[in-house]
Length: 507
Image (cartoon, rainbow, N blue to C red; front, side, top):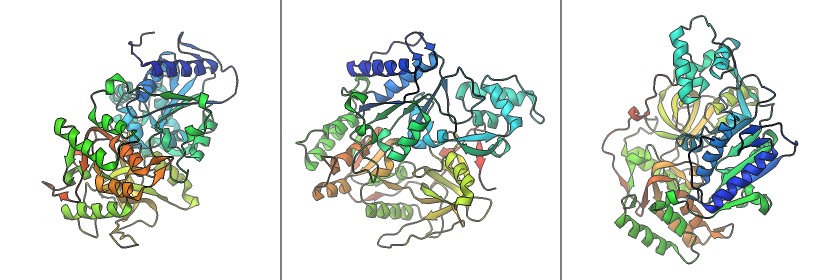
C-alpha cells in the first residue's frame, strides 16, 4: 500500500486492528486491498470511544484512506450513480453540518446523517453529467452547455468530489438539476459516524438499518442527548464492542486547552481550583485568555457558550444593542440557529428539501438579508458545502423576563430560527470554532447547585464540552460584561467562490 507511515499509540493500533478484523468479516481486506462479497448478512456495530485528543479523528481518517485505497466507494449524499453488484461503499457521517465540516477540513469527506437518509433525484439530462464525473459514463453533449463549461465542472469535481458544486461550476443552479429528494431504499456497506455522543436511539436504529457494518466514534465525557437520562448509544453496547482510547496522542501534547479539559477528570478538583488553573494557564500561554468581558465581535461568528437559557437571552440582547440592531428587524451579519422546520405533512417534500440543504435543527446560519418574497430570508449555512440558501423563515427574538418571543417578520410556514449570538453548551456539542468564549459565571452556578449527570458533577461535563469546542483559542469569561464592537456588522467574510452552488428554495 502507498499510505504514508503513521505511528499509532498502542490503543490506537489495537482499535485499528479490531476494526480491520471486523471489515474482513464484511469482505474488505485492508492488508491486501481485496474486496469480496460479504460472508454473511449479519450486522455489526463497533464503538471507538475516547476523550478529546485521544486520536479518534486520526484513526477515522486513517481507516478511510485504507478503505479508499482498497477500492471502496465513498458515498457523500450528493449523487449516486447506477448501483453495481460488485461495488462496496463507505459513508462518513456526522449529526450536524458543523460537525461534518470539522472532518472535511481535515481531509475526510464527511456529510450529515440526513444527507444519507435522503438522496437527491436528478433531472435525467443532467444525470448524464453526474455519471460522467463519477466515472460511470461517457462525456455527454448537453444543449446549452459548452465544452468549456463541462471542463470547469470536471476540474472542480476532481478537486472537491462534489457533484452539485461541479454542476454549479458549469453555470447550473440546484433548481436546474435537482428535482426532489427521496428516502434511501438501498442499504450501504460501511458507516463511520463521528460525534456519536449526540445520537439518539431513533437515529441509531435508522443507521443500523442502512449499514450492516457500523463504526461509531464518540466521547464519553460529553453531554448525552436530552431525554436519554445521561446515557449515550455506545454505552448500551457490550463491553467487548467498545474500543477505548485512553492515551492522549502525541500530536495533542503541549495543547493547553486539552490539558484543561483533561484536568476536569480529577475528582478532587473543584470549580474554584479549576478556575485558578485556567488563570495560571492564561499567564503563560496566549491560547488561553482569562477574560474580564465578552467580546461582541466574536459573538457574530462563534457564539458565547452558556448553561442557563436566561443567560443566553440576556447576552443576545446585549449583542443586538451593541450593534444598534432595531427591535423589529435583523441586520445582515446577525447569527441565527435553526430551531426546526414548521411545515404541514402535505409539504413533506419541501421539508426534506430544506433539511437536505443544511437547515436541520441546530444548524448555525448567518442572515444575509431579505429574500425575494415577503417572509423569505437569504441565509449562509455555516459548515455546509453549498452554504447559500433562500428559505421561508420564522425568526424569533427573545427578551428577558418575557414568555413570548417577538417575531420581527415571518412567512406563514418554513424554517424557524432563534438568535445565535449565544447558545447553550448542549446545542454547541458537535461544533468547533477557532476561538470560543465560555461564560464561566453560568458554570459556577451549576457547581453551586451540586447537580450530577451520569455520576459526574454537571459543571464538569458542561466545562469539558465547552472547552473542547475551541480549536485554537479559549476565552474563559469571568465577568458579566460586554465589550463594544469596533465597527458595524458585515458579511464580507462570507463571500462564496463563483464555482459554489447557490440554492434557492423560494419556489
